[in-house]
Image (cartoon, rainbow, N blue to C red; front, side, top):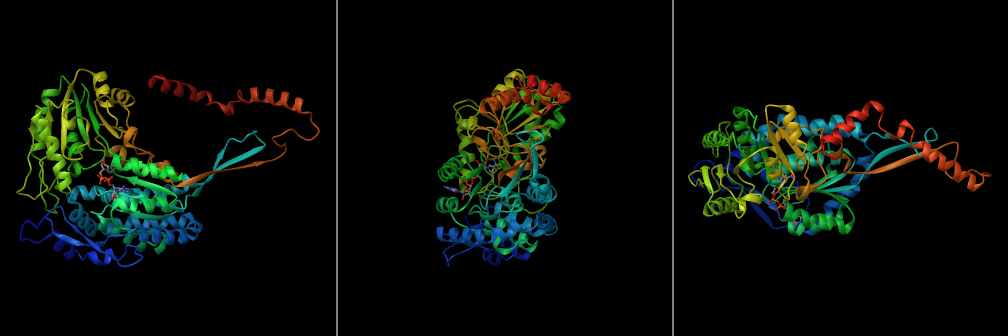
Length: 546
Ligand code: NAD
């Protein structure tokens, strides 16, 4: 795409902010000089800078450097590792003008959406800086023989963690997944998407300024198709974020090597507007849920099921509000949404909407490209009458397109929401917390937000975040988001009696005693939930229908 006007380009804006793409490109790990690829801004097509097209040799070198640095890093006190994450958080916040400029230019997202991502990165770094110790300190476990066996669970680093990240959240899906891996004592090799390397490189720059030893984290750049396999071959664990199609490929490769992997993949996320929803907040929430970052958000809502009694009013008000969304390429706070990311994204959105309309769907808002703003701009679009034969019915659009459906009752809404192979995120709207909770518990999705689209669950960094079904395996955030980068190890110390028959005791007598002990052991309160917990456990089981 050629620059669309003679006004200052995105590259000019970067220079004005004092950002030197060539210096950032110099942070890429290379075994030898390589050809380069030019990164273009989706906003105006201008060239932002060049990055090397890495080869498997570069990946091998990056992994070797990381592996050599890892033992000393793992031996660094956890408190010191956490203080680096704290400093990184502070730098992300204090240098936000530059980071926002890179994200805006490279990804095209509006300033508000870029800021939300930046804030998420800072908060995640802060969360793990404060909580890594809690998640990684040795935990006491029940021993084999109470009183005689002392058991602990400890967590050792995996070694070298590979991270493959996408373009849509180029800062947080690179840095926020790297931070817990690093705090757990691993070294990291990151391969960002080829379209957004400068954001990841800017994050690496800040991590090193925060005190991260140079060799502990490496970045390689180049196509996933040629660097993915060598990366998986060289690391001890893979953190992948991207499409379900690529996720299947990398998960199979990890399985072949018997290394673990966490795959955060696509979604076709439902929103349920229950009969007692407050439409004032629901309409506004739906706009955020469907269109943030121009719908190029894995947890974005693409299906809305509205109780039939609210359907007409909701559709009218939602369409009206959607038409007032401000599209633009400016970096100011007044712009709501930027463009789609590239030609492929633009073509997919056009294809999904055109296919739906050709097969009988109705456009309530949007439905048109906006070439007057730039090559990849497309209006946020509300569809009704979307049916099974239409691509947008089941396939992830990953753009600003949502279909609204009427439903007769909660059961119909829940059945429709769960009628998908995906299971990433869901959203329930109701003025009655107990009603919303009862519906939420019956949804098959890794996160369910009540009276929010996606941000409440995502930003609850102490709770796990990830997908069911073909939306992925593994979780980020919380204890799971850091322990996945470790090997759990059980250390059990025995004192007094051994676990086998003591010397001189007849084996038959030993077996009879242990048989009795086995029966008694299961009656001890230690092996059951405490009495005061039982009602809670039973209630939850009944609630979930189990
Ligand atoms: P993608 O799978 O095409 O690319 C993601 C990354 O994988 C890129 O870095 C790419 O270079 C790399 N890659 C491509 N082919 C590879 C291969 N054969 N081996 C190894 N790596 C390879 O994904 P995309 O289309 O760019 O991203 C959008 C998708 O990501 C959407 O489906 C979206 O829902 C999903 N996503 C999920 C989450 C989540 O947390 N669940 C977050 C963001 C995006």
